Length: 398
Image (tube, rainbow, N blue to C red):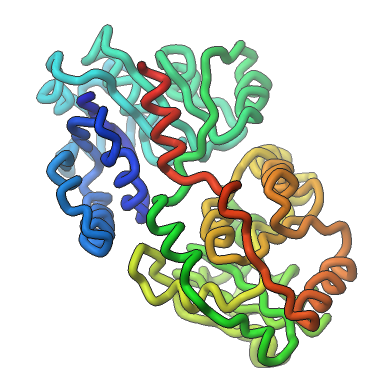
């Protein structure tokens, strides 16, 4: 099979090695924004670490070559929503318009422009088989999104819950979709991490150690797109006052827009139970996994208030990618009951994690675990990897 992959990728490009390992896959040509091209260094580094460099011969990476003028038009079209202008913006797709591809795969979020890219590709590739995989979207109507949902030949959602989400939002019937999460990690990295022998910090001091693995930690919840989902201050306060040590690993702490203060630093200095750690580079071969594996449990996203209905509706179906890092690192994912039903379901199905109804209940569970020094191991047979996603992708077009 020869595949044209359009749209965004993320830093864990090494997961694509699972797809490339399938003998059915002859070639995957990636076409993406210039700003994301550097992510493929991780793919190459991990391939070298595991000695599978030969798979890289199946890969080519091209950029859309937007240029300043075309980029300005693209931003303007987010307002006017012209399908004709959208096709012009992505006119470079003509270079890839030949009959060599078995299918075109477009992914993955509402914020990375991939729905616009899908709309343009549908015009350029006409009758080609087009697969749309989905990960993150918000509960707000978008013309390019409903166009994609109606015109994709195949849809892949992270969970069945996306069916009801889209049907409620757009009032359309969603049919013919498969379920697989494109954030599932590279199978060889998952196995390698599970085999690392690392002592838990709690085995030394009998204090629960909980981590927060995140790209951003907000100093207030006013940010429009994600707000409360990255505002960890309240949950940290609840944990530290119960004698639980929290370790914050964030790529960056985003300052408050209303006042000059860093509540994370304040909590750290006041209690000594919040450690503001450096960001972790998590990829096959990285020693940072030895840091991550020291912890007992991991926070996903804080709850979203009922008054933030659209954001709350999204959180109900979203599966944070960090849950997969926690699982393969033998870290118990923590979820407040009914805050994130999709996560609650994963914890229930795998029997690995903590769904709590009160902070006192959570504290008791964590302290009992730390004091008993019970081995915390995830049943590896229940963890999905990108090999499983690849099987779904290939199966959807076979």
